[in-house]
Length: 263
Image (cartoon, rainbow, N blue to C red; front, side, top):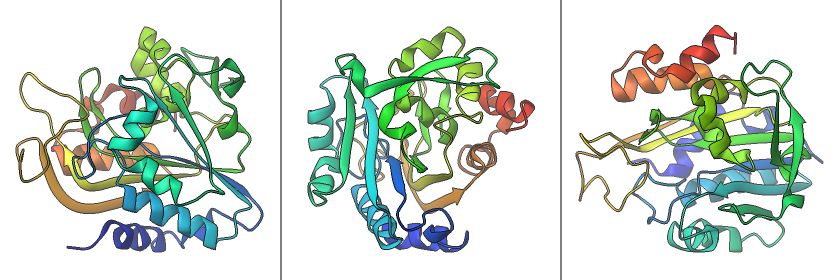
């Protein structure tokens, strides 16, 4: 099977390569999925090899600075999650890459800044990672997974990890997810949906992380060896719903809301 880095390079080549998005001297923010304390290969977090490959590509494009950002809202906390999911080990290979990982609700307030969402419907202002706002380019790395609250999570929902209090969106979750995809100071320029492995719902359990893989838990995790990259998260999520879950995109309400908002 093709490796994750090969799949990534092939997907990006179809868009004109990483140099279409990253120019020499720019600050680049990469947002992987690093929330879960489960091993690589379980479709729980971003594949460490894929993250390493993206960092190398961004460096080759001449980025002046790279910052990797995510918000771990779950126990046992950011440090243990990064150790178990292998992302921390990869980041240790890059001492010049800045790392900003929120740890549940213990993160210092100075990590965040309030920004406006002029086109937001339910949310007009939210606190987000300052490091993401200060970047010239933001890259969103998501995984297609089942989810207890929204049934499925793809590119759009993954953006919630930028926020100081992601759970605040639960007051109007579907509209909130659509709102954070509107033009703002954390607008993402490139979305990557890592479908090397895809996590599927099992009746009664729709957890977005777990110990199983395609061998030990083939009902929940399937290996598809795909990588989707693009500039339109609504289109990517619609593709994921259709191709991976055999569902209509409109069955995921936040995708429908985002589409109706012209996103």
